[in-house]
Image (tube, rainbow, N blue to C red; front, side, top):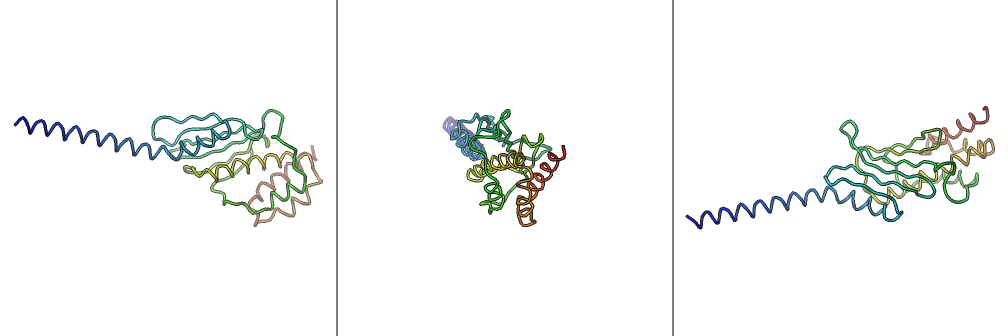
Length: 199
């Protein structure tokens, strides 16, 4: 009788330990993609990162990237998970480095992108901020790196095209074709240039 009770206790104890280990492993599998990928990016560029301890796909990284304010977050909105990347002008600067020439802007807007966009890009705050929003979770490190640079380039090109004004308009009109995936942004640039000229 005593041996049966001891065996029952041991089996129950091992079952409980196994259940706890399995539960922790499942939670770690949910957390690992986000934590590893996003933390690598945060460490690579000295960005601040925060991830809660639970398995929910919510967290963020933020800091300075190429002279811009960068914020990447994953959150739940209306029961949907959204990945959002925001690049903003830091005070009055428009990023680090020499501003692109007219030809460089046109070339960048014309070239084939290495990735198909998985979300939408739009400007806010009169072109001081550019936002990428994607439904679902995004853990692809190379794709996120591509987005960091694409959004910085688009924001830099936008501000430089405003400075160039009518000089860049014919070139932008030539590449604003339906085949060009960045055509919506080019139309925004043309509108902004026209609005600035009439002001």
